[in-house]
Structures are given as structure tokens and as C-alpha cells.
Amino acid sequence: MKNSKKKRSGFVKGQSDFTQLPTKFVYLNNGTEGSMPVSVIKALNKNLKKWANDPTTSYETDPVLGKRQKKNRQAMAQFLGVQLNNVCLTDNTTMGLSMVMMGLNFKAEDKLIITNHEHPSITSPTWILKQKLGIQVEVRDFPQPAELSRMNADQLIDYLFPDIPELRNATALCISHTYNTTGVRLPLDKVKKRTDKLNIRYLIVDGAQGLGMVDMSKAGNRVDNCDFYAAPTHKWMNGPPGTGVLYIKNLQLCPPEFYPPLSQKMGAYMSGDEAHACIPMVEALTVRGCSMIPANVALTKLLKFFDKIGGQAKVEQHILGLSCTVRDYIASQSPDSLISPADNELQSGLVSFYPFNWEHPQKCFKDKDGVIAVVDKLLEEGVQVRYVPFPTVDFSDECKLQGHAPNLIRDCSGEPVEQTFAIRVSTGYFNTPEDVKLFMKTLKKVLTV
Ligand SMILES: Cc1ncc(COP(=O)(O)O)c(C=O)c1O
Image 1 (cartoon, helix red, strand yellow):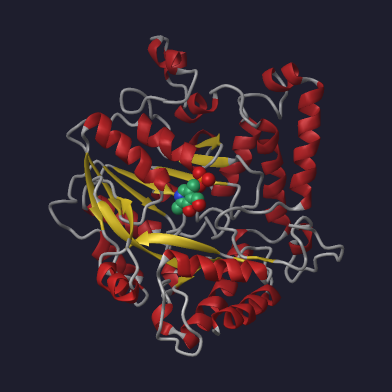
Image 2 (cartoon, protein in one colour):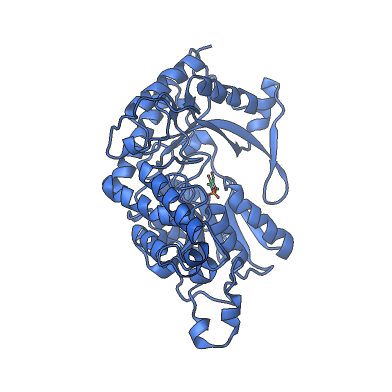
């Protein structure tokens, strides 16, 4: 992607700091990867050079670059409104979730609940637990898109997690804060209430599509609704690649309830020495060999960037404002193609819809080749969105009617399930109303066949 010479103009504070995003290109895929403001790129370069200049001192004793990372963890803890010893810096969401799911001392008789829309960062460790331990897995199906798009948060929580014997007293509920497929954001305070009512022991949340998109100080987004919350700082936060955060609620967490699976500190819990036995779990998970610490230092610059632009509430307002415009546009032309819900509480910075024929908007298409063709045509016109697959239950007849073979994936039971494909638009902080207008104009052109 070539950079244009013209300077990026800003619509809200700090947008012109995203100097590496080309100006004549509309990037609407923050849900996959973010860009970085210039202050973060500079801090990353500066700290890499500092490290290269004196590697051993940097790693062993430097107050900022040093291996325990207290300053970097403290800055992130403050951003999340939690304590230093609730926070471990990771490489990404997948690492955080894997640490949790491999760390908890699950037994064969335990039960995990997930939904059929979880990302592989949850389903993959779930499969391992099922294969290795024979753990029970209960998969809850989301409603079909037509029903989902009209639901409110309470209705959806009742649908997904009803008070039924299959869910009561489960060991863990593993879900996403925001679904990368449909853009549904679950209010975590309400989910927490439901897990308490169902007497589920752990609430484990995949925050890949949460942190940096929404205001984490709001009741429905707070990480302390969860026992564990794993998130990236390389997506909506727009931090360096290979950075992320894991929140752990229980400050006393230790073996045998939880064994640190990626750590050099298990010995501390076995020493019998009380001073060592109470080492915070986040610290045990931090001491895991050399990490990309210069990138974590650059994160502290990123948190200052958030302060400069007015804080998380401002960021959320901008992102959700733009996604509302996208949603309304799709709804006004082809209400049946819309997948993302209209309810304020469920809304996020992601909008998903099935592509459709502009002249005959009731004709949606959901097959892989058709959807990818639209994404590719948009890219040729200088607009980047992405396609997302997700499972459906009523696709096969429709597929057969259209002469397409259903696309199959495997769910947690190992059974093949059918999936449909949709277009997903992410409206990031760096996007402007002009970007969204250009997307809408280009979409109309591409779908007019
Ligand atoms: C819901 C969800 N979970 C997890 C991930 C993986 O994120 P990471 O690259 O931070 O591990 C993604 C990436 O798109 C995602 O959308």
C-alpha cells in the first residue's frame, strides 16, 4: 500500500497522527489490525535502539525496559481502572486466552460453555481440553441473523444463556465481549449477573474486539465483571503488533487452582517459602523469557495518546457514531441483509451484512466466492473491508437452491457445520465521515450489477 504525499487531514483530535495510513485509501478493517499514531512508532524505534545499544542492562535492570515491566503494567492497569497485580502484558489475545484455559486446573468432569460464534482463540484451547481431559463442552447457538438483528441485550442473553440444567453449575463460560462475526457486543455486567445466577464459576472473556473500541470504564465494558479478560493492543487500540493484555481478577490466584502454563516461576509456588508462594499470578506469567518489551514501552506512549485525544469515551463516541452511519445506510437499502443489531446496548464498531444486488436489494448472497468477490472489488476501488465466515443452521437448502456446495467447518464436537459469509466493516478512530461516505458510494457502485 503506497503512501500518498498529501498529509492526512483530521476530523477529530489526533487523527492526523496516523501518518502511515495512505491518504487516498479507506482502511475500514481495524477489527483485524490497527495502525499506529506517530508518537508510538517513534517510541518503538527509540526503545528498540536503546535495547540494541545495551541489551543486558535493558533486560535485567533498566527501570523501563526491565523484564518485570512494572511501569508498563501499571500504566495499563490505570487505563483499565484496575490494580497493577491484575495485569499481565501478553503478545495478543490468543496468548492470554491460552494462558487462562491451559492454566486453570480443569478436570474431566468440568463443563465449559461457549457459543457457536467463538473465534479459534477460544475454540482451539477448548478442543485441546476436550481431547486431553475429556472435558464436557456445551455449545450455545446464536439466533439466525434475521432474528438477531432485531433483538435487544436482555432478549439475547435470555436466548444464549437461559436458566436450564445444561448450563447450571458449569465450570466456565467462555465468550467474546464483541463478536467478530456479527458485531454483537455483550454487556458484561449483565452476563456476569447471569453467570452468578447459573452458578458458573469462571467468566472468561475474549476482548479482541473490545479494548480500544469502547469505553472500558462503562459498567457493561468493565474488565472486572470477568474473572479473566484477554485483549490485544494491536487492533482497536492501534498499538504495536505483538502486544496485548491479560486481566486476572483474583489477586490470590495460585496452584492448584491455576498453574502458570507459560512461565519460569512455577518453582516459586513449590518452594514452601511464604514470601515466594504469594507471587502474583500475573507476575509469574510475565516472567516467561524475553518478550518484545520495547513494544510494551511504546504502549505507554499510546495511553498518553488516548489522554491527548480526550479519553476512551471520546474514542467510543467517534467509532460508534461512524458505525451507526454504516448500519443505517445498509438498513435503508436492504434491511434483510443486515446482521448487526440495532439495539444501542449491543452495538459496536463492527457492522456485518450480506452483500446484495443494489437494484433488487431483497436478493442477498452468502456464499464464499460471491462475498470475496465484493471485498476484492471494493479493494480495487481503494476501500478495505473484510469478509467473515460464521456458522448457520438453515443454509443448506438455500445453498442447494443456488447450486453452491455448503462450506463446512468443524465445531467443538468435531462435527462439520455449515457456514455463511458476510462483509464486515470496522470503523476505527482514524476513520472520518468522509471515509464512510466514500465507502457507501463505492459499495453502491460495486453492488450495482
Ligand atoms: C474475537 C477474536 N478473538 C481473538 C482474535 C485473535 O486476536 P489476536 O491476534 O490478538 O490473538 C481475533 C482476531 O481477529 C478476534 O476477532
